[in-house]
Amino acid sequence: MAKYIALAGFTDQGIRSIKDTVKRADAVSEAARRYGCEMSQIYWTLGAYDLVTIIDAKDEASATAFAMAIGSAGNVRTQTLRAFSREEMADIVGKIA
Image (tube, one colour):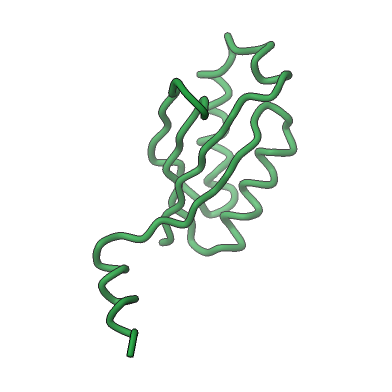
């Protein structure tokens, strides 16, 4: 599975209903499975981003569909980063001539 790190910021709508953020996170974690993903970690953070999540996805299309579905709810805006493990990076740099 591919690993992604999603950096999220609350929208005006999301911050207005901040008291529901833990319930929403549970619902998002459950929704991830419908897209072939697993939200393995979620952290509420201070600073430039309000949330950081770690997501495992079976493929890029699944990760993209999941991100679009979550974004369409209107509570967060995300920036998603593909993350590579040490082993994956070793394989990648091993292909450099």
